[in-house]
Figure: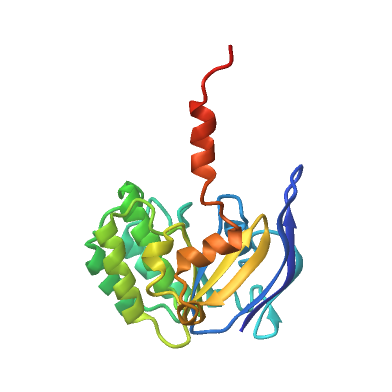
Length: 246
């Protein structure tokens, strides 16, 4: 069980990027993390991974996240964490040597699925290929908690759709995915839970099953939580098209 208690994080000269976020994420969930740009999604993930200092407490099975258990987490980020001068094959060997639970067969299968070359330096991949490789490493590390921050940037809709199906097929019961994305409608069919951040605060937390029982889809849930004003575009256009004053 991953537990966050009253997590707050501020940057110099700014308001809190996170403000008292508390939640628990059991193993075996696929969780969507949603919010506008600047809502705190990336900051929250980096706090979980110990990449940011923060106020509050983050524990895994009652123990602080640190060197003793950090291998239970992996991270796929569009900022990229691979070694650009190494080939994919060299990454496989490195991860196999340094992560006891590394899933070599999964790595090979995903490389084949994305049709990525094993003998080419990863830094020479296209943007979409780099993001695919980042996801492959995160899924193959052998972690219990797989954090993904906008992992599908640069990938076409068909690649993304096929990947969602593969993801559902390969995850084991103890594996948990925390996925930050703006592609709400695309992921609504396979996530089981939605978390919504707004200005650093957790403003909504619901299971997709609960939403379905209430007759709501994910987009409706997000709009209600954000108190989205449906007429904001109409009002803006009205102001822009007003006749100039004499």
